[in-house]
Image (cartoon, rainbow, N blue to C red; front, side, top):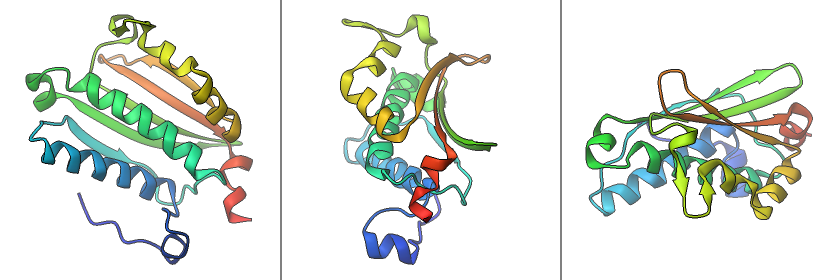
Amino acid sequence: MRPIIPSSEAVRSGRPATLKSLVERLVDGLQREAADCDRPLPRLVVDVAADHRLPADAAALRSLVESGLRAAVQAAAASGTMARTGEVVITSVEYPGRLELEIADTGPGREERQTPAGRFADAMQAAAEHRLLDRLAASARFDDCPEGGMALTYSMPLAAAHRAAA
């Protein structure tokens, strides 16, 4: 992974200035944790546009993305063999009126992800996560990937995504 060079905004505020830098920091943290524990990670691919700004509530987005990313890594690395062949891809796309961030993995599909409390996707229904989504005026969607695995997509209005620039 190439080094992250913080912008002057990030240096002044102590936080990443763009969505890409936030995602890269989270990925870097996961890579350091895995190295410290001598645990294999699936391949982590960041394909987030450099010009996508963070929403005004960057802390809420960071919490949501970190939770989704950790779950995707865990699913794609369910076993040592899966970790060596698995992949997690983080992408962002800007549409008219909204920004989407997708975390897709090569782990099991939605129906196969079970926890003692129910399906994996049900974890997003927790009140705390709903509050974070509400703070961002965002939504979350789970989809099975055609090639296997699952994708979690956060969608937020551009007005919320660009408030930080005002």
